[in-house]
Amino acid sequence: SQQGEEDPQALSIQEGENATMNCSYKTSINNLQWYRQNSGRGLVHLILIRSNEREKHSGRLRVTLDTSKKSSSLLITASRAADTASYFCATDQRDDKIIFGKGTRLHILP
Amino acid sequence: DAGITQSPRHKVTETGTPVTLRCHQTENHRYMYWYRQDPGHGLRLIHYSYGVKDTDKGEVSDGYSVSRSKTEDFLLTLESATSSQTSVYFCAISSGTSGGNEQFFGPGTRLTVL
Image 1: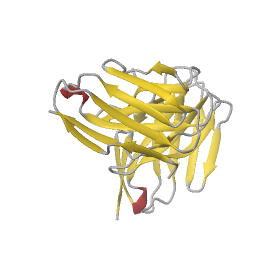
Image 2: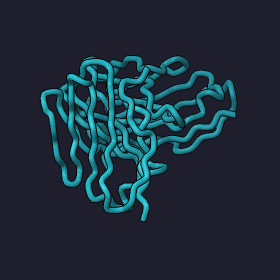
Image 3: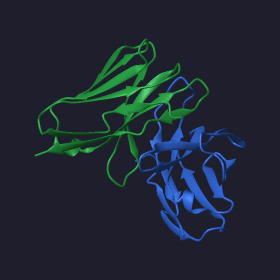
């Protein structure tokens, strides 16, 4: 079974609003990463948070990690039309494997 | 984009035919991965490599084999393609160990098995 599970599966918000996506996982990890995928393209790395970190920022992105709850969240502030994409969390397991979730489809409405 | 290419980009084949997909990198990264992406399943790891001639299975390895004879090339082979292997296949590379490095993805190969 897959390690990461994103929630919600799909999200539509108005441009300018904030978007929050969540990821839950099952086993101990070294780190957790978030990726974006535009339609028909490969995945692009957004941000990595290590297991000993609780929060990380990168531009309009804010990621939190709660290892006690085995969950992470990705917040995109002041959303733009260009943020429309699918977002995946990926957990870096201790055996060198990186396991992806099924993704959240984000649609920014004009 | 990172120096990673996949070939072919599109392929249509028939059931029972062998198929080989190629991933080529110019980054000299140690780790290479093959994923398949299907609606409702996200990305699933097929096989990965942690060095030349060093490979291991992922979560959906049945029906697939891989080879890595050079650092820059990672081949995925479907010995006898089935319709269930119709998918989009992505190759990814990474420089790091489980300490955590980002993966760079290729553009994908869309495979259709009739």
